[in-house]
Length: 256
Image (tube, rainbow, N blue to C red; front, side, top):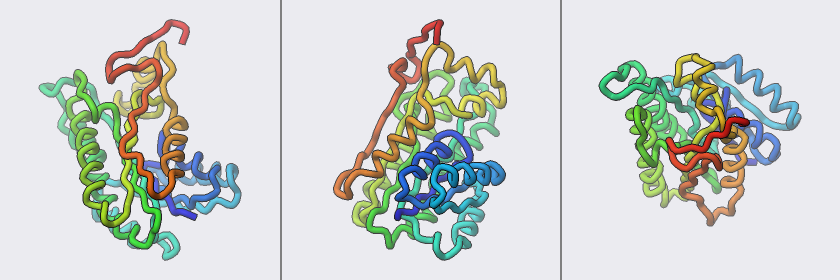
């Protein structure tokens, strides 16, 4: 039984990962997010999916390093050894040119997408020392492979995730810890709604005329990556909807 720690597990890809892995019946799930009430709702769903699933939830803002250290060090003893870390917590805010960018948006993206990933990884990696099948999965993005208009700081943070993933793979090679980057294109989650600061209609418009990826699509890929034999590591996986060729070039059809 492998213990999987998922950040940002209260919605989107993180929630989908929890539900998908609960079905596998070979994972224990350690879930964190800022919204504890939502995590508790998800835990109930996980028990419906698999009544024997072991689930532990706790509130965590990955941007707060003292909180990260404190929360993980105070976990119950049986949850202090981690086999899999899924660094899922991340967001995009705003879509302005760099000359008009909001400093608060920049700080939130850098603090969550880059520093949060670092804070959690730095704290969790020592907790993986007793695992004989340790694996870190970082959620990147097509934005970490190219830069698109008005993507500036968000693209920069995901390029940083790409670089950090490569660095982790080198630094952790002798530790026997596998490191994978999963880089999705358009996924319909709360992502666009967060980016547009609650404007649901504008968020829906992002996916108009095409079928985007779902959180479950990405979760099933992560499940596959985790199921590979120990001598196999999928370093980097870029996955897009069929209707998307690049970050900005998509095929839209009126009936979708």
